[in-house]
Amino acid sequence: MIGLLFSPLGRYIVIGGIVLLVAFSAYMKIRSDAVAEVEAQATAEALRRTQDALRAGDAVDVSPDRLREPDKFIRD
Image (cartoon, rainbow, N blue to C red; front, side, top):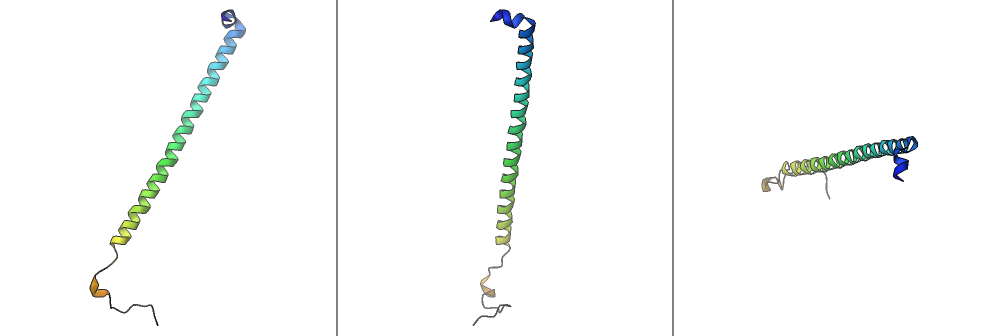
């Protein structure tokens, strides 16, 4: 087995294995970075929506003086 590694064919097999290992490692790194980026975007979007909802809720005038004011909606 060790004799195969030192033969010319064995060297090509080892170099091919190293090339495949490097390519697979690069693929896994790119894939994990892409997943992390998508998760970060989703988190940022959820945070933005939550903050927008809080701001919209804070902007509502809930003073009791306006409770009896007429509005544009007609009710029976």
